[in-house]
Length: 297
Image (cartoon, rainbow, N blue to C red):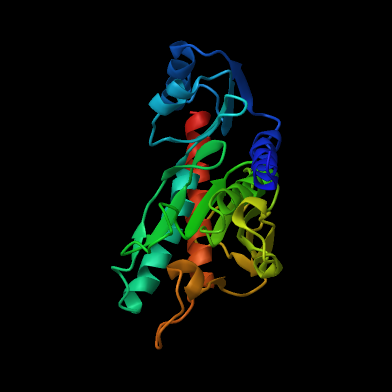
Protein backbone atom coordinates (compact mmCIF):
# COMPACT_ATOMS: atom_id res chain seq x y z
CA UNK A 1 0.00 0.00 0.00
CA UNK A 2 1.36 3.47 -0.94
CA UNK A 3 2.12 6.23 1.55
CA UNK A 4 -0.92 8.12 0.30
CA UNK A 5 -3.17 5.08 0.83
CA UNK A 6 -1.85 4.53 4.34
CA UNK A 7 -2.40 8.19 5.16
CA UNK A 8 -5.96 8.11 3.79
CA UNK A 9 -6.84 5.03 5.85
CA UNK A 10 -5.43 6.69 8.96
CA UNK A 11 -7.47 9.85 8.36
CA UNK A 12 -10.65 7.83 7.70
CA UNK A 13 -10.23 5.91 10.94
CA UNK A 14 -9.52 9.11 12.85
CA UNK A 15 -12.87 10.49 11.68
CA UNK A 16 -14.51 7.51 13.39
CA UNK A 17 -12.31 7.32 16.50
CA UNK A 18 -12.87 11.04 17.16
CA UNK A 19 -16.64 10.63 17.50
CA UNK A 20 -17.95 11.97 20.85
CA UNK A 21 -18.77 9.55 23.65
CA UNK A 22 -22.54 9.96 23.32
CA UNK A 23 -22.53 8.70 19.71
CA UNK A 24 -25.17 6.02 19.09
CA UNK A 25 -23.67 2.86 17.57
CA UNK A 26 -25.89 0.55 15.50
CA UNK A 27 -24.92 -2.75 13.84
CA UNK A 28 -26.66 -4.34 10.91
CA UNK A 29 -26.57 -4.38 7.13
CA UNK A 30 -30.28 -4.66 6.35
CA UNK A 31 -32.66 -2.05 5.01
CA UNK A 32 -34.05 -1.80 8.55
CA UNK A 33 -30.85 0.00 9.55
CA UNK A 34 -31.44 2.66 6.91
CA UNK A 35 -35.08 2.96 8.01
CA UNK A 36 -33.92 3.42 11.59
CA UNK A 37 -31.69 6.29 10.51
CA UNK A 38 -34.63 8.06 8.90
CA UNK A 39 -36.80 7.35 11.96
CA UNK A 40 -34.28 8.92 14.33
CA UNK A 41 -33.85 11.91 12.03
CA UNK A 42 -37.59 12.44 11.54
CA UNK A 43 -38.75 11.89 15.11
CA UNK A 44 -35.65 13.10 16.97
CA UNK A 45 -36.10 10.19 19.37
CA UNK A 46 -32.61 10.81 20.81
CA UNK A 47 -32.54 14.47 21.99
CA UNK A 48 -29.11 16.03 22.18
CA UNK A 49 -27.45 13.29 20.11
CA UNK A 50 -25.55 14.58 17.10
CA UNK A 51 -23.77 11.53 15.63
CA UNK A 52 -24.86 8.02 14.69
CA UNK A 53 -22.29 5.32 13.87
CA UNK A 54 -23.57 2.43 11.74
CA UNK A 55 -21.41 -0.68 11.36
CA UNK A 56 -21.57 -3.41 8.69
CA UNK A 57 -23.38 -1.25 6.15
CA UNK A 58 -23.01 -2.43 2.55
CA UNK A 59 -21.95 0.24 0.03
CA UNK A 60 -25.20 -0.02 -1.94
CA UNK A 61 -27.19 0.81 1.20
CA UNK A 62 -25.05 3.85 1.91
CA UNK A 63 -25.63 5.00 -1.67
CA UNK A 64 -29.38 4.95 -1.07
CA UNK A 65 -29.22 7.21 1.97
CA UNK A 66 -30.07 10.86 1.45
CA UNK A 67 -31.50 13.43 3.85
CA UNK A 68 -31.53 17.21 4.08
CA UNK A 69 -31.48 16.80 7.88
CA UNK A 70 -28.24 14.79 8.03
CA UNK A 71 -24.71 14.56 6.67
CA UNK A 72 -23.08 11.26 5.68
CA UNK A 73 -19.60 9.79 5.77
CA UNK A 74 -19.06 6.24 4.52
CA UNK A 75 -15.83 4.23 4.76
CA UNK A 76 -15.47 1.39 2.24
CA UNK A 77 -12.52 -0.09 4.12
CA UNK A 78 -14.55 -0.87 7.26
CA UNK A 79 -18.08 -0.64 5.79
CA UNK A 80 -18.93 1.86 8.50
CA UNK A 81 -21.08 4.96 8.19
CA UNK A 82 -21.37 8.15 10.21
CA UNK A 83 -24.56 10.19 10.14
CA UNK A 84 -24.40 13.69 11.58
CA UNK A 85 -27.83 15.00 12.54
CA UNK A 86 -28.27 18.57 11.34
CA UNK A 87 -30.19 20.96 13.59
CA UNK A 88 -31.17 24.62 13.60
CA UNK A 89 -27.83 25.72 15.08
CA UNK A 90 -25.96 23.81 12.33
CA UNK A 91 -27.97 25.40 9.56
CA UNK A 92 -27.77 28.85 11.14
CA UNK A 93 -23.97 28.79 11.28
CA UNK A 94 -23.48 27.36 7.77
CA UNK A 95 -26.00 29.71 6.11
CA UNK A 96 -24.59 32.84 7.77
CA UNK A 97 -21.11 32.00 6.53
CA UNK A 98 -22.67 31.35 3.11
CA UNK A 99 -24.24 34.80 3.20
CA UNK A 100 -21.01 36.52 4.28
CA UNK A 101 -19.02 34.92 1.45
CA UNK A 102 -21.71 35.73 -1.14
CA UNK A 103 -21.87 39.36 0.00
CA UNK A 104 -18.10 39.79 -0.33
CA UNK A 105 -18.18 38.29 -3.83
CA UNK A 106 -21.02 40.62 -4.81
CA UNK A 107 -19.13 43.67 -3.56
CA UNK A 108 -16.20 42.73 -5.84
CA UNK A 109 -18.45 42.02 -8.82
CA UNK A 110 -17.60 38.30 -8.61
CA UNK A 111 -21.03 36.92 -7.77
CA UNK A 112 -20.86 34.65 -10.82
CA UNK A 113 -17.36 33.38 -10.05
CA UNK A 114 -18.09 31.28 -6.97
CA UNK A 115 -20.89 28.74 -6.75
CA UNK A 116 -22.22 27.50 -3.40
CA UNK A 117 -22.26 23.69 -3.58
CA UNK A 118 -23.80 23.09 -0.15
CA UNK A 119 -23.64 19.60 1.33
CA UNK A 120 -21.92 18.12 -1.72
CA UNK A 121 -21.07 14.40 -1.41
CA UNK A 122 -17.64 13.49 -2.77
CA UNK A 123 -15.57 10.31 -2.89
CA UNK A 124 -12.04 10.23 -1.53
CA UNK A 125 -9.51 7.40 -1.67
CA UNK A 126 -11.40 4.86 0.47
CA UNK A 127 -14.43 6.83 1.66
CA UNK A 128 -17.03 9.42 0.77
CA UNK A 129 -18.27 12.40 2.72
CA UNK A 130 -20.76 15.28 2.77
CA UNK A 131 -19.99 18.83 3.92
CA UNK A 132 -22.14 21.31 5.83
CA UNK A 133 -21.25 23.97 3.28
CA UNK A 134 -18.91 24.35 0.29
CA UNK A 135 -18.00 26.60 -2.65
CA UNK A 136 -16.63 25.88 -6.12
CA UNK A 137 -15.05 28.45 -8.49
CA UNK A 138 -16.91 28.96 -11.78
CA UNK A 139 -16.40 28.37 -14.60
CA UNK A 140 -14.76 25.08 -13.69
CA UNK A 141 -10.97 25.23 -13.60
CA UNK A 142 -9.36 22.50 -15.78
CA UNK A 143 -7.79 19.74 -13.71
CA UNK A 144 -9.57 20.64 -10.45
CA UNK A 145 -12.15 17.89 -10.67
CA UNK A 146 -15.35 18.19 -8.61
CA UNK A 147 -13.70 19.41 -5.40
CA UNK A 148 -14.67 22.74 -3.83
CA UNK A 149 -12.02 25.24 -2.76
CA UNK A 150 -13.72 25.94 0.58
CA UNK A 151 -15.63 23.69 2.95
CA UNK A 152 -17.54 24.38 6.18
CA UNK A 153 -17.94 21.79 8.94
CA UNK A 154 -20.15 22.56 11.98
CA UNK A 155 -20.63 20.60 15.19
CA UNK A 156 -22.86 21.36 18.18
CA UNK A 157 -21.35 19.05 20.75
CA UNK A 158 -18.12 18.31 22.55
CA UNK A 159 -16.52 17.11 19.33
CA UNK A 160 -13.67 19.42 18.34
CA UNK A 161 -11.46 16.40 17.56
CA UNK A 162 -14.10 15.20 15.11
CA UNK A 163 -14.24 18.55 13.34
CA UNK A 164 -10.45 18.63 13.10
CA UNK A 165 -10.40 15.12 11.62
CA UNK A 166 -13.08 16.14 9.11
CA UNK A 167 -10.95 19.09 7.98
CA UNK A 168 -7.98 16.77 7.45
CA UNK A 169 -10.21 14.45 5.41
CA UNK A 170 -11.20 17.18 2.95
CA UNK A 171 -7.70 18.50 2.36
CA UNK A 172 -6.02 15.08 2.12
CA UNK A 173 -8.61 13.28 0.00
CA UNK A 174 -8.84 16.19 -2.44
CA UNK A 175 -5.01 16.13 -2.79
CA UNK A 176 -4.99 19.76 -1.67
CA UNK A 177 -7.74 20.92 -4.06
CA UNK A 178 -9.74 21.96 -0.99
CA UNK A 179 -7.73 25.00 0.08
CA UNK A 180 -9.39 25.96 3.36
CA UNK A 181 -11.84 24.35 5.77
CA UNK A 182 -13.81 26.55 8.16
CA UNK A 183 -14.75 24.58 11.26
CA UNK A 184 -17.39 25.95 13.62
CA UNK A 185 -17.38 24.40 17.09
CA UNK A 186 -20.53 25.29 19.05
CA UNK A 187 -20.48 24.49 22.76
CA UNK A 188 -23.40 22.55 24.16
CA UNK A 189 -25.88 24.66 26.08
CA UNK A 190 -25.22 24.17 29.79
CA UNK A 191 -26.80 26.07 32.65
CA UNK A 192 -24.48 28.55 34.40
CA UNK A 193 -21.75 28.03 31.83
CA UNK A 194 -20.39 30.59 29.36
CA UNK A 195 -21.64 29.94 25.83
CA UNK A 196 -18.93 29.87 23.18
CA UNK A 197 -18.51 29.32 19.46
CA UNK A 198 -15.09 28.86 17.89
CA UNK A 199 -14.48 29.69 14.23
CA UNK A 200 -11.26 28.17 12.90
CA UNK A 201 -9.61 28.05 9.48
CA UNK A 202 -7.64 24.90 8.62
CA UNK A 203 -5.20 24.98 5.70
CA UNK A 204 -2.46 22.83 4.21
CA UNK A 205 0.83 23.41 6.02
CA UNK A 206 2.70 25.75 3.60
CA UNK A 207 5.96 23.87 4.19
CA UNK A 208 4.38 20.73 2.71
CA UNK A 209 3.87 22.36 -0.70
CA UNK A 210 7.62 22.93 -1.00
CA UNK A 211 8.46 19.24 -1.01
CA UNK A 212 8.97 17.82 -4.54
CA UNK A 213 7.02 14.61 -3.96
CA UNK A 214 4.68 12.94 -6.41
CA UNK A 215 1.00 12.95 -5.46
CA UNK A 216 0.83 9.26 -4.39
CA UNK A 217 3.70 9.79 -1.91
CA UNK A 218 2.59 13.15 -0.54
CA UNK A 219 1.23 13.46 2.99
CA UNK A 220 -1.10 16.37 3.54
CA UNK A 221 -0.31 17.91 6.91
CA UNK A 222 -2.68 20.66 8.02
CA UNK A 223 -2.39 23.57 10.42
CA UNK A 224 -4.71 26.07 12.07
CA UNK A 225 -4.18 29.51 10.56
CA UNK A 226 -6.71 31.44 12.60
CA UNK A 227 -8.93 30.74 15.60
CA UNK A 228 -11.59 33.18 16.82
CA UNK A 229 -13.96 32.53 19.73
CA UNK A 230 -17.20 34.37 20.43
CA UNK A 231 -18.70 34.12 23.90
CA UNK A 232 -21.56 35.31 26.07
CA UNK A 233 -21.78 35.17 29.84
CA UNK A 234 -24.18 32.65 31.45
CA UNK A 235 -27.71 33.77 32.17
CA UNK A 236 -27.69 36.34 29.35
CA UNK A 237 -30.33 35.09 26.94
CA UNK A 238 -31.55 38.53 25.86
CA UNK A 239 -31.17 39.28 22.15
CA UNK A 240 -29.12 42.38 22.99
CA UNK A 241 -26.79 40.71 25.50
CA UNK A 242 -23.15 41.63 24.70
CA UNK A 243 -21.01 39.14 22.79
CA UNK A 244 -17.23 39.23 23.01
CA UNK A 245 -14.82 38.25 20.22
CA UNK A 246 -11.36 36.92 21.06
CA UNK A 247 -9.00 37.79 19.52
CA UNK A 248 -10.77 40.93 18.32
CA UNK A 249 -10.29 40.41 14.59
CA UNK A 250 -12.06 39.39 11.38
CA UNK A 251 -11.89 35.86 9.94
CA UNK A 252 -9.58 35.88 6.90
CA UNK A 253 -10.20 33.90 3.71
CA UNK A 254 -7.42 34.48 1.19
CA UNK A 255 -8.51 35.29 -2.34
CA UNK A 256 -6.23 32.71 -3.94
CA UNK A 257 -7.70 30.00 -1.67
CA UNK A 258 -11.30 30.87 -2.49
CA UNK A 259 -10.94 31.33 -6.25
CA UNK A 260 -7.84 29.17 -6.85
CA UNK A 261 -6.12 32.02 -8.69
CA UNK A 262 -4.26 35.20 -7.86
CA UNK A 263 -6.35 38.37 -7.38
CA UNK A 264 -6.47 41.03 -10.08
CA UNK A 265 -6.67 44.51 -8.47
CA UNK A 266 -8.97 45.73 -7.03
CA UNK A 267 -9.86 42.13 -6.08
CA UNK A 268 -8.88 41.33 -2.50
CA UNK A 269 -9.07 38.82 0.33
CA UNK A 270 -12.45 38.01 1.89
CA UNK A 271 -13.11 38.94 5.51
CA UNK A 272 -15.94 37.60 7.64
CA UNK A 273 -16.33 40.63 9.87
CA UNK A 274 -16.52 40.53 13.65
CA UNK A 275 -20.09 41.85 13.54
CA UNK A 276 -21.03 38.94 11.28
CA UNK A 277 -19.40 36.45 13.68
CA UNK A 278 -21.43 38.02 16.50
CA UNK A 279 -24.65 37.88 14.48
CA UNK A 280 -23.99 34.25 13.55
CA UNK A 281 -23.34 33.37 17.20
CA UNK A 282 -26.50 35.11 18.42
CA UNK A 283 -28.65 33.26 15.87
CA UNK A 284 -27.04 29.91 16.74
CA UNK A 285 -27.67 30.43 20.46
CA UNK A 286 -31.26 31.47 19.81
CA UNK A 287 -31.74 28.29 17.76
CA UNK A 288 -30.30 26.28 20.66
CA UNK A 289 -32.76 27.94 23.04
CA UNK A 290 -35.67 27.05 20.76
CA UNK A 291 -34.59 23.41 20.52
CA UNK A 292 -34.12 23.18 24.30
CA UNK A 293 -37.61 24.59 24.88
CA UNK A 294 -39.10 22.06 22.44
CA UNK A 295 -37.33 19.16 24.17
CA UNK A 296 -38.83 20.07 27.53
CA UNK A 297 -42.26 21.09 26.25
